[in-house]
Length: 489
Image 1: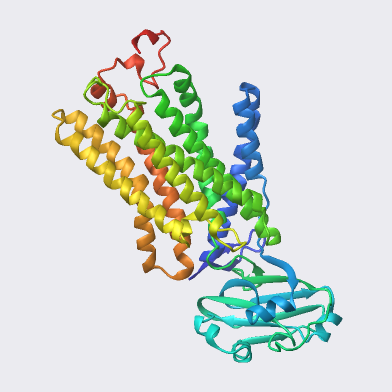
Image 2 (image 1 turned 135 degrees about the vertical axis):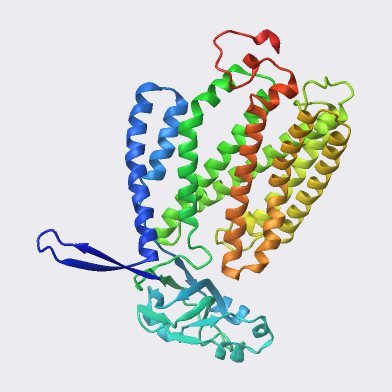
């Protein structure tokens, strides 16, 4: 879609027309936001460092500076060794997989020793939508099915990918003269070093954007997510910090919620740094990608422990807990055992899912590409049913309308947290293959953030929670009263 702008030249007073695409407008708004936020960050950092000299302000300033001063670029690079022995064992050594879209796709292969490649008759094979049926073919038939065969006889080879009507996955395999000759002896040559660059076309049609189709847009999403975190932090950081210092009936819950939200922010920051670096060199910072997954896992585990402790603790001890204080943190042996059991199970499944993949490429655990990922979703469904039965028992026996509203709001937050992942995973089937992982990843992050907001509003509400808990207004967590009422707790 294109639109035409008519502007008037100041000097000649003549109209000048410009054709602008929607992609150009999107990029213009994106970079305008980055520039505006950079200016805002500079002002905020100077004010923050003057007013608050504590560790929290310095840490926040460091995070903001790292994110906002990152440069913008694109890229994917694969480096390694062409090995004749591996190519023979696999009927073609797998090199990489990339999803091309649109026009002017490009693959660049660079060699360190072109003479050795010529001697070995090395070639790079490109397959479009590689079929599993190819595994049943003979070695020579399998290699002959390649859409493109690139003879590696020079230091650099460029291969243009034809126009793709829809995003299509292409796989690159390596083969040489020894791949299909099982009886031939492979000489003891050194392995052939290579560098493969993969390019999609940018908005101008130039092969400069190296994100695969299933990865496009994730960096912009994490940038906007960090922007939202930054703005929310500027607005709510100080009152929340005062609430945590003051304490209150929900002090432990607020600490866990704040910790989980902070861990999600750290995960988003690490993902953004990884993708920003990945966009420049195509490799990224694998440590940052692993850290992002680690912080996300810790956040998931902490939220699970809090929700199970609140819900199961209240139910298992409701007979001796004052009814005027619903959903208080409970540390009875039964509730602790249930919470710890759920946390350990989820933690083991998360670690299993992360380290069971043999692929070296960075994937979010939201992709659910293994048995452990499916078991994780099953665990969330079981926990949702457990919490539903518990909350149903509570609500069905509760006479107070305000308390029922309180529990219903709590149930919304819990169900949104646990069910968003399985539901989005099932809904992703209706999307194209290159969109599924992005839909699940972005949807889960947004839904769980909304769930945290619901729980924050619930436990910090000066109206509903005050009525339900029968607490005075000065003892509520966010009440800015100067008098000390700690004796009320």
